[in-house]
Length: 246
Ligand SMILES: Cc1cc2nc3c(=O)[nH]c(=O)nc-3n(C[C@H](O)[C@H](O)[C@H](O)COP(=O)(O)OP(=O)(O)OC[C@H]3O[C@@H](n4cnc5c(N)ncnc54)[C@H](O)[C@@H]3O)c2cc1C
Ligand code: FES
Image: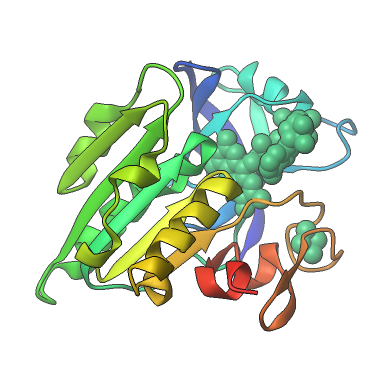
C-alpha cells in the first residue's frame, strides 16, 4: 500500500545541466517498482502542490531521486541539505511491466531517472528465466553524467549528446522497448517502432502536471484509445499505441 512517510535527506548532489541527485531515508513502506513515483514535499504551504518524482534507485530504507531543476518546487529540492525533513507519498502508479528477453530502455532529460532502477530490476527479474538483456539508450543535451552507474546497471550503454537518441535504436532487435522522456521523443520512437512492425513492443512513461497524484482530482487526465485515463493512477506507464495510436 502506498503511504505518506516522513523522510529526511541523506545527501543532495548537483550533477550537470541543473540535474541533482537526492538521497533520502524513508524508513517504511513497500519497495517501489521501477517506473513508480513519489509525491515529494519539502516545504510548508507554498507551493501548494507536492511534486512527482520517479524513483532512480531504492536501496534498503532509502530512496534516491534524479531530477532536473525547472521551477519553484525543484529549486526548493535543490536547496535541501543532509538532515532536512521531507514528506514522501508513494510508491504511486503502475511501474514498468514484467518483461523478458532483449529489452531496450530509452531515456532523455528527466526521463532517464526511472531507467537506472528499471535496468537493475529487469536484469534481476530475467535471471533464471533465460536472462533479460538490457540495453540502455540515454540522450543528454550537455556533458553526460552518471554514465558509470548506468553502465554498471545494463548490459550495454549507448549515450548520445545532442541530436536524437531515438536514431540509435533499431526496434527490430528488441522484444520490448521502454521509453521515458520528452513526449516528442517518445512519439518519434513510436512512429519508428510502428514502421518496423514493432509498435506493440513499446511502452512509454508519461509525464503530466499532477495535483493529488492518487487519482482523485483528474488534473492528469489524458485521452487514450481506451477513453480518458489518469496518468497518476492508470499510468504513468502505458502501451505506446494506447496513447500515440489514436
Ligand atoms: C510521474 C512523474 C514522474 C516524474 N519524474 C521525474 C523525475 O524523476 N525527474 C525529473 O526531473 N522530473 C520528473 N518529473 C517532472 C517533475 O515532476 C517536474 O519537473 C516538477 O514537478 C516541476 O516542478 P517545479 O515546481 O520545479 O516546476 P514548476 O514551477 O511547476 O514548472 C516550471 C516549468 O516546468 C514545466 N513543467 C512542470 N512540470 C512538468 C512536467 N511534469 N512535464 C513537463 N514540464 C513540466 C512547467 O510547465 C514550467 O514551464 C516527473 C513527472 C511525473 C508526472
Ligand atoms: S493528479 Fe489527481 S488524478 Fe492524477
